[in-house]
Length: 102
Image (cartoon, rainbow, N blue to C red; front, side):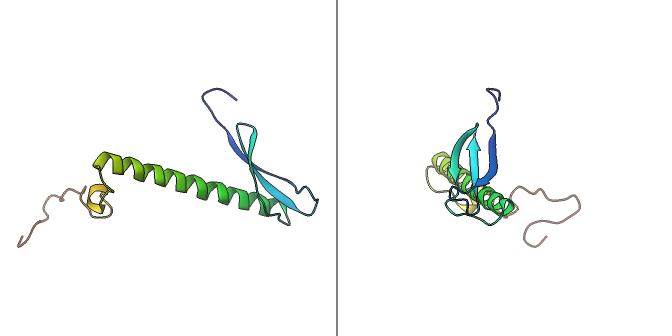
């Protein structure tokens, strides 16, 4: 592993009681999380651990982006400020009328 890359891996191991499998998330080779549930197959344990990782990272990134936008605007951002589906970034096409009564 190089200093400029951090590897996050998901693997499966046999449960400590040997009654199934658990998912393990490693960050830089260090075990960061082990599922508390056990699964009947390695693939089920792997899928569960991947889903946990994806959901968690997504939530963390969304929260951080929201916090950054709130700091930038000085208040929780409005849809218009974020440009959510309002077409504000679209330019009228040549030859198409725009505006009221056009």
